[in-house]
Image: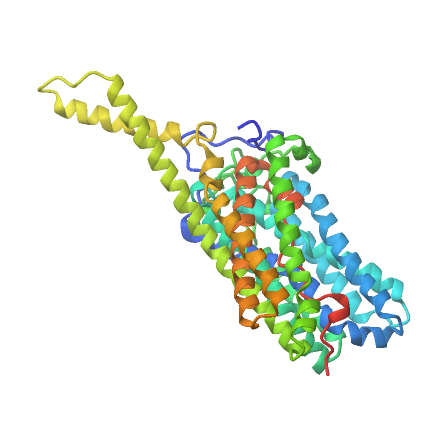
Length: 472
């Protein structure tokens, strides 16, 4: 694949061909996925936990609703722009320092927001921008970690579970925010985020190792001390050794993330993913206003509960995608091995009697060579393994969206739109996670950069600014 490639600008030694892709065990990989999934929770959580408190903040700052809503708009803008800055840094300077830097910015901005005077609207706006800059990039950096530790055969499963963290935020954010604003005041929201982000920072500082392959290879190379966890609980991390008596020298070079847009296949996938996500956004963003008009018996609390349907579909889809992607990869792999074995048997002469043992040993050796050959990145049809289910899913997705519009137009029972919302969330996330996994397969060395260009904070903001539930 012309676009497959990684960071080649570092002086760190490369692992030998026979070495495993990652020295971490399967259990250790799941531990790392759980850590980064927790960190990835903060991007959507910070965006959505703020929304129920907007009416209260309007009164506290004596500003119009439009001006306070502008703090939400600016947050979303920075949430989209910031990963373009942090992603290349993570691909150049390491995952661990970027995680810690992002959480530091997030924690500091939350302290400022909790203490901001109600007479300083400009400071509220500035701190919300800083909050977005700190929280938004934890998601993209986490995707980089998965690209570092997981081979393509298991990458789908890890990415599916990893997506659960970012998916939980939009579901629980408004609930937590409303409860805190109602019981303890709007400043309690930011104190809660400060404590949670500080706790995550400490956890990552203690246990998260550096995984950037250009620095640590497959995990067997011990990086400089500033990149090492304070408590190296992973066996592979404790066993890693530097290649010399001194820490390996690392040459840093910042890569422009927009360079990946020059690859035709990547650009095509980006456009496809963008159209798909635009449809997904239209469905979720219009839910509140449409349901208020079509189902007048629903109050704001019940309308908020309706979002659990599409959120539940997203969660189920994230888990299902991982299993499907790993299964499809193995199916294509077995198919290629079988074809290669048949082709080889046809090209070779029949074995002579009396040398069965030697023939069996030779056949076993040739089978291993075939497996190694067909699974090489340059030989394996990764696009087919990832995308062959997408056409069927896309047809179902279009059908569900069409049915959802028809149900609303005909004002059918509420159960109809909710069921279709669940399916839209399930199928939509399955397709988007599939393309996201393929992006990491195509550019494993720039997985944070590519994720910064493509990955949205989904599901989108679940409440329109003029449809916010007002705490009693």
